Amino acid sequence: MTLAWVLGARGLLGSALCRALSLRGVRSFVPSEKFQWTNESSLRSQIESAVREFSAHASQANHWEIYWAAGVGTMASSEEALGPETRALAWLLELIQSDTRLVAMPGKLVFSSSAGAIYAACSDEVITEQSLPAPNSAYGREKLSQEDLLRSFCAANPAMTVLLARISTLYGVGQATGKPQGLLTHVARSIVRNKPVKIYVPIDTIRDYISVDDAATEIISVLDELNSSRGLSVKIIASERPVTIAEIISIFKRVAKKSPKITTGVSESSMLFSRRVQFRSIVPIGARMRKIRSLTVGIAQLLGAERCVHANPRRQSNSD
Image (cartoon, rainbow, N blue to C red):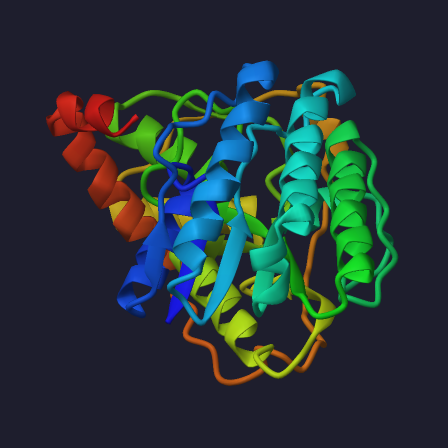
C-alpha cells in the first residue's frame, strides 16, 4: 500500500494530484492542522508535527510518496516574497531526513517546478531536458534554488527517488481568482461576465498549455515508471502542442459563439515572458502514448465551469 501526501492540496495542481491519486486507490495523508503559509514561525512547527503524523501513518504502508505542489509565487514575485516558500521546503526535507522510519522505507518525492520560469530566457527553438536553464526573474531563480535543495537531499539519501517535474503553463477549472496568472481562466471569466479581456503580451506569443488534470496524471505515471529507479530525474511535463494567443482567442470565439472583447497593453511582468515557448520531453520515462485533451475541449470545460460559477456565486466562495 502507498501512502501519499500532497502539499498544496487545495491549489490548482495539488487538487488535481489528489483527484488522480484517488482514482488509483492511493491512500492520502492529510495533516490534522491546516498550514499557515503566511506565518513562518507557526508554519515550521506545523510542518514538524505533520511529518511526525505522516511517519506514524507510513508505518502501516509499504512505501510513501510526497508531492510538493505548494507555493503562491508568480513571475512577478520578489526574491523576498519567495523566501518563505524555499525555507518551508528546506524544513520539510530536513525533517524527512531526520526521521529514521521514513528514511528506512522506500520513499519518493515529487517537486513541481516551472518550465516557463526556468527556461524563460532560453534561446533554444525547442526546449528539452538538455536545454540549459536560463531564468530571467526572481521566481525562476528561486525555482532553481528549490530544485538544488532536492538535489542535495537526493545526494544525501541515495535510496530515495526524486522527480523534478518542470511543468509548462497549467490551466484548469478552479484556478484562484486572486492570483495574477492564468490567461485561459481570465479569458473564460471575462467572456462569461461580458467584460473586456485584457492581454498584456503580443497575440503572436507562443505558449504550451496543458490541462492540470492531464499534467497530474502524467506526473504520477512518470513516478510509477521510476519504481525500480533511485536517484533524481528531471522531466518536462507539457502538452508539446504550441499555440499562439491569437489561436486561443479564435478557439474561445468558436466555443463561446461570441467574440471576446480584447484590450491590449503592456505590464512590467509581461517583459519577463519569452515570446516563443515550445517544449518537448526527450526523457524516456513517461514516453508511452499520452492522452492529452485538446485545447478546444479544455477551453469548453473552462467555459462550462465558469458559467456554473457565475450562475451560482456561492459555489465559488465555498471552494476558495
